[in-house]
Length: 289
Figure 1 (cartoon, rainbow, N blue to C red):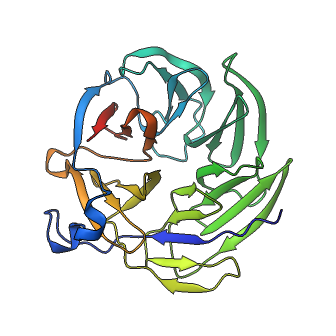
Figure 2: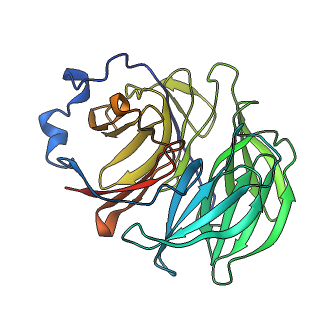
């Protein structure tokens, strides 16, 4: 069956760190929205430059991409993937090592896919071993990725403002934009692709027609589905919950504490949101209430 995707782009437009009328859900959405995020654990501060987290149900573990020393495009070999237990304790710090600056991750059929600057790394989740390292055509600075139900990977290329589609070892340009810069997070849910960029807030239909969206997030990064809406993270230490009609609620703001946020993951059946913290070198677990 042919899949039809709609694409959402969420980008920064908020100038205030406080919750105001634009950050609160209206009455129709409030019944479905979570009320708060409660911090229930944080990891040790050994996760150098952690950029992305992902949960795998089969191994019941959290995987963390750690870029190591900056800059975030350094070919220095000090990047790694860490494996955490569900309470945030570190099961194996350098579960997979020898990477450069790993960022986005996706899980499909017992494999963990990881972007690493210009490469796509494939890791066997059960063995903890790299089984493929592939240079991606058109990939100068690969950032996030997600996978659809057929196993096709969608990768953001931040510097070129592209979304690439990778299927069965072949890569093609899926979408390109000059107006929406700095493409970052990407998320697939129910035959829809959502992605974040540094400029503008837009919908893009499957026939590539752009229309404005009302949701805006300051410094947008990761996106994850939760119930009838989405959690969106901002690298400026903020986590939001928003709905299709643009209602937005700020759930976490740690920017005054100089605490970053990056590419989050949500485990809906555990009511758990996991947040990497980039240069703070730890991962935080929040109970969704």
